[in-house]
Length: 313
Ligand code: SF4
Ligand SMILES: [Zn+2]
Ligand SMILES: [Zn+2]
Image 1: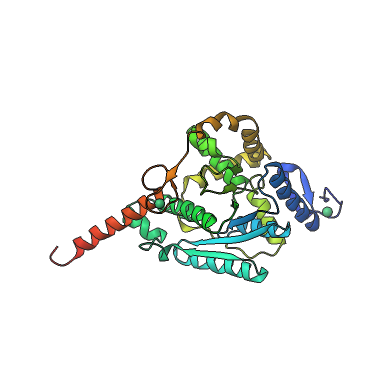
Image 2: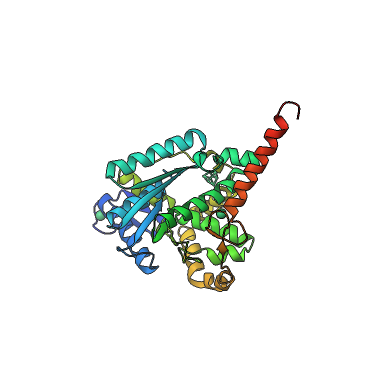
């Protein structure tokens, strides 16, 4: 196959777009795609400061790399989840990426926060599934770091596959409140929140992997061990089968939802105006935000367990 742009030998074939690219043209295609998404959705401007949540995986590092290349002001944010060797390798990868490019990086480690909040420990203490504990803590630390650092925007590396799987899950259960928030740009609902954006929302996992490979970005290939068996993977698998039979399905699913249906759910989000958490001051829908609730639960349950284990108890 020949490159769709310059007619040289193509190195990558994108069935969904019925296009092929040589290496320089592919990198250009990817950058332009991100640039257009940023402009079309008014995600941010060159004057704004962007906090990029990086996990060490291909998507978030590809995102950081492309934003730097496009000249945006970026700082990375890495949250150490305390998930054994996976977290150690992720942190190393992110730190090496930032150091090699002299980019600013903020590192927070859950095990060092509050009473010790490594994901596996919190999951055991609260009898939650690890992903539920992890999700609540990620949201809190991302929001808090963006607010404390005075950033304008928080960018995440969610790609088309993530968005299509999430959409499928939301549609299967008709979760109106979730559908109302499924957008590539989320305006802040409180002065302590910042705008949240997903510049890769229409680029597939394959496309970001090719970009990372061509740019020579080392990334952590292994998935978080807790991801195995997650419902999200089941949806991704189903969508991959549909995509194989009918290329372009994922793209059309997400793009058409945003174009034709998402607005129908927008009213469901209008009522969501949070107050402030009495403990940490971040936005909350009750006296405590869900993160502080979780911390309190960890502390109570650990104290109870320690009391029960004391000799003579
Ligand atoms: S798969 Fe791992 S990183 Fe993702 S939410 Fe679950 S515990 Fe957190
Ligand atoms: Zn070319
Ligand atoms: Zn709180």
